[in-house]
Length: 157
Image 1 (cartoon, helix red, strand yellow):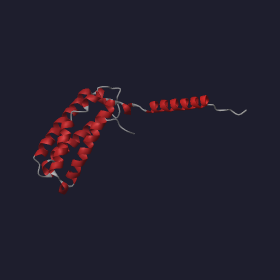
Image 2 (tube, helix red, strand yellow):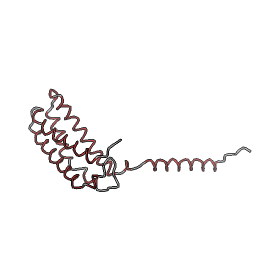
Image 3 (cartoon, helix red, strand yellow):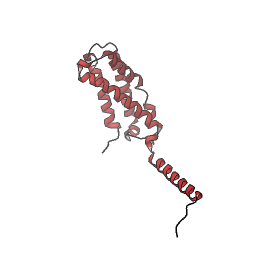
Image 4 (cartoon, one colour):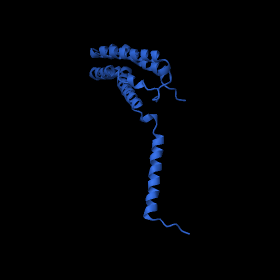
């Protein structure tokens, strides 16, 4: 016997389909939707962008633009304190390693060092006339990023 679809059964079918889709989307949305994870990842993505602009100039000194370097260094120094409060919730791990919380003193020391080094880079950039004026401080900031990521960023297999 053939089944006859009425408006009511069609509405039920669509309702169930929409509910299943909504549940599926909810299940797929995970820690990536956490506002703390998003805030710190957005900050660090912006830092990476700024480091990339400055790094290109360090790699190719003939492209050095003091005004652009100064702007990027100032941004980095101003934003250097922004993501750390977004690591308070251990449930919002994201790409953070468990060491962020188990070695909180070490993590705090890395954050403090990063802020100090970005301030030093910014100070050097404000009066720089060549890449040689900023290269040592830029290298120190890069080393700080690497050091922190080595211990406190989750390893991807």
